[in-house]
Length: 298
Image (cartoon, rainbow, N blue to C red):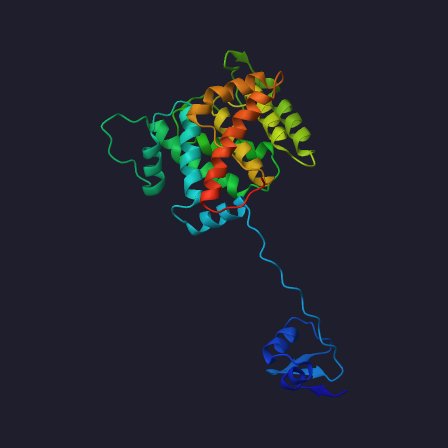
């Protein structure tokens, strides 16, 4: 069999020599082989068909968060979500740190000077919450599991005063019954089985909607699996699942807190209360996405 050089094939096929070399290197020309640095191409080889150019894939919010996190970009949507989600979720649970103080901790990794006393736990849980957000971004595509949920709790509560109490299990379920909003929650001995059932039902859903995520959240909060930190863990899970299923995520602010609580309490009687509250929070997120020119499902 007669073999031709790259330049001869390039002329025959009306291609650049670089393109022909790439075809050879990619194994797209049958029978081509290299000796030293020279490609030998069968005279009767067929010209490969050009692959259609791929259109630029539209990047999702999750794609952008992962990229900005990896590049340590300052001032982008990742930066904003870290501060806003951490401040609001902790503030709902009683943290006294201001939005500016939360921003300062995130941006400088220091506390800053304050004339007022600052609760050490507020600082620890703020820095821990930043790490939790990183985790839900890194593992957004993972299926929800007990291991994931417990890992989030351990990350949030490690180093706090609670972690020093012998009756408080960091990264594990409660051992003492608790109430939320004056309502009884699942007894400690039943938590594991109920969480497993909740996860099994949720993970079998084919096309997850906002209502599915809200329903999971309500059930999770009613189980109240941990001694403390349930609200923040639950809201982190909601944010993660929205990212995973290309639903615009949202942040429950102080202004929405009581509507949010009412929505959880009344979910089984009227789903509109919680849904409308979360849609309002979602609208705020959409404004941020519009500002940063990030596309989303309308």
